[in-house]
Amino acid sequence: MPTPTTTLALGPEFLDPEWLISTFGLLGILAIVFAESGLLIGFFLPGDSLLFTAGLLTADGEYITYPLWLVCLLITIAAIAGDQVGYAFGKKVGPALFRRPNSRLFKQENLLKAHEFFEKYGARSIVLARFVPIVRTFTPIVAGVSGMRYRTFVVYNVIGGILWGTGVTVLGFFLGQIPFVKENIELILIGIVFVSVIPIAIELLRARLAARRGTTPAEQAELEHAAQEAQRHRRGDY
Image (cartoon, helix red, strand yellow):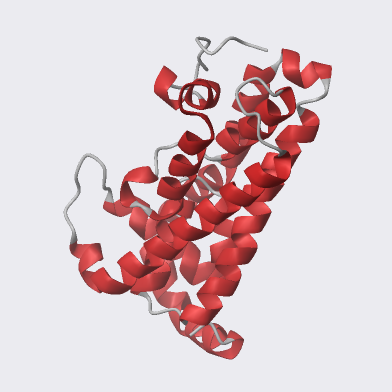
């Protein structure tokens, strides 16, 4: 197991999951999960790798001494609560959010990316977005802006929170007891980050191919909008 001072090659030490956990403990995990799940300032925080490391270190017992069930329960609650706040924020701010100027911590492209994701998958996006970096932060906000039915949002939010918060943590817990995983934790975390950004890479590739064909994502969205509206109404998303 690497020491807390060992950092991943992917970023600065303050974004290294093991350093965060060894420094701030379970409360730090909960704060990060809450922020990344629905606050505009949380999109850059580690998500999947943090939960996997939390499970691994729960199995190790060095930095997290609480039982696995309690860790999973608290992480799931933090994830669900974060999405609820994001939804409420989007509901209150509304379309004005899409006119907000770019800043150091806010980029319109992230919001638009989440909006396209939400338009494509409807209510299911609340669950699917949990496993897509950046998108998981903005999707509940977009759901609020779009006026998604609250009861529907809550159901999918709870399902997504359980699958992500508990699922990834439990995966880290059991895999963390395998010697190979413990001895190669940095490579494992890099792999998790790599896999988690694949959806974004695919979307960028699709956008580039569409641009070569002379059809932008905005134009595609315009063409598909009517069909998606009909589908959402049939599914009862609103």
